[in-house]
Image: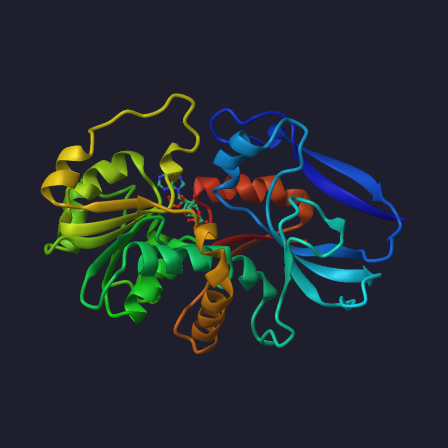
Length: 329
Ligand SMILES: NC(=O)c1ccc[n+]([C@@H]2O[C@H](COP(=O)([O-])OP(=O)(O)OC[C@H]3O[C@@H](n4cnc5c(N)ncnc54)[C@H](OP(=O)(O)O)[C@@H]3O)[C@@H](O)[C@H]2O)c1
């Protein structure tokens, strides 16, 4: 009998998630039936969406939602070979039985020198999100100026680098000096620590006196109020996330955006990456190629041990990570 461990959500989060909001549970899995496979997790992903989606999709006692890279340890499905790897959206759990639906196999010729955890980050959902938001939603063009916040994170760090590949000028903001150093290392033209600048408005103006054509929005709230004022005529804003608002119990109110949207003739579009799910394989191929060629740098913030998964999640929301936050079992 195989024992599976899972992290469940004890209660809905109030403000920032806390360690006591999670419970580690164990259960025995049944024997495999024909057509089924048994998988064990190797890497798990912790992502900001888990905070708002826990409220929308989960009830107390449910296993935390999320994706992982898992290895096949037993197979009663002829097409699935023991030892192969899959990305599966099965939540925070160490072992699971599947009939293969809702999972996708990692390419058998995955490069030896690259960690498979990249399929949860630069070459996975966050990488595709960066690609879509920048190229499909913002429609960024060579010579334009791109602003991205959460710039040192899983999505933001890829946004900036794709923008450079496409010939844009890139400005990024992040929450520590180490993150700013990292952004410069991976090719951002300008980067600043939004927590220590005396004025966000001045920092944005100094970084790009010529304004911004594209704004890849990950933060929302007060940051957006200031950034929108720096947009150029016909600027495009891809609303990818609003992490500064995810822990709010009382919705924020603020300056209203209609005047700036109107007089600068801006276009703002919210997007969820899975609208482009059919294009994921092509995008992933391109992202993997850029990574292999060294054109796209990646960094992972790895938390070791499944038992530390809540701490890894809480730390990522707090800003501990440079690049993709990963849990290594
Ligand atoms: N629309 C989609 O399909 C889609 C898909 C994936 C992700 N997203 C969104 O993209 C954004 C980035 O996600 P990610 O996976 O790349 O996460 P990430 O940037 O790797 O990690 C989250 C980062 O958010 C920053 N942060 C936390 N609280 C903040 C606050 N109050 N104000 C400003 N920054 C704050 C922290 O960095 P600092 O140190 O810089 O503060 C932290 O490192 C999130 O908003 C997420 O919801 C959307």
